[in-house]
Length: 78
Image (cartoon, rainbow, N blue to C red; front, top):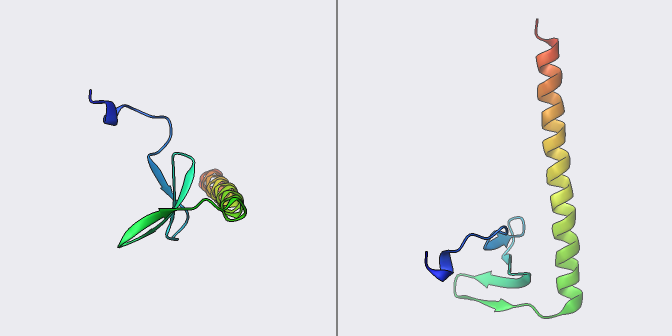
């Protein structure tokens, strides 16, 4: 297997919501159609980290609500 295709527990890149911001290898990048630039401002990247954490928590909460809704619907069906 070539070195650049080795399996990794983390995704290669992760887009933050529908924004032009991507996290690659623990670093935040601003991405446009014409290129990308590494964000090195600690205040900005800290806010991106906090927002990503909040989005992940919201995604988990929505998934839990959907599971609960499906399970309660199954119990009500006779």
